[in-house]
Image 1 (cartoon, rainbow, N blue to C red):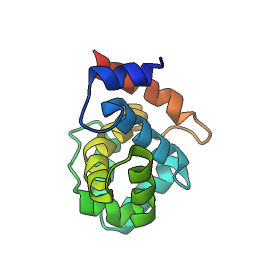
Image 2 (tube, rainbow, N blue to C red):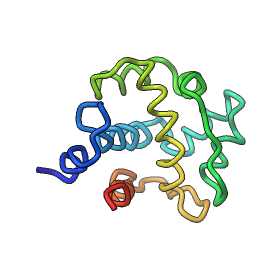
Image 3 (cartoon, helix red, strand yellow):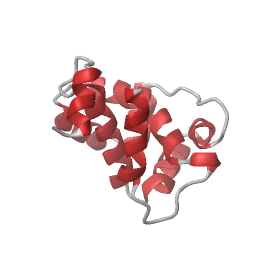
Image 4 (cartoon, rainbow, N blue to C red):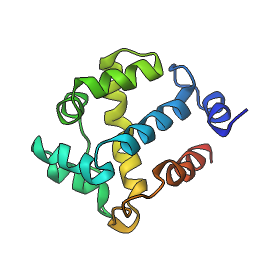
Length: 134
């Protein structure tokens, strides 16, 4: 049993695989986003959400984002991919991303610094998952 499976059992959320699956899906989505974190930031900036996404990178409080804003920034195709991966509806996927994306981006940008190109974001995100288990 993987750490993700164990975390899902410990933290069941009503979503198949629990919060661990949610975190893994968000990490995977960020990792696979064209341009990685900088590309994700650009997607949000293009939708007028630059201040919001910069708050996730910075050292202060993470500003919230709505599911609709996430869908606007990422596009419905990306939301549908995440939904299919998790076995949930696209509306639940967008609101779930809105909940987890600020935390994931915050964790992947320690000290307000975007990781260098080629960084293994999935590996970096493993420590985030461990923090959820504490």
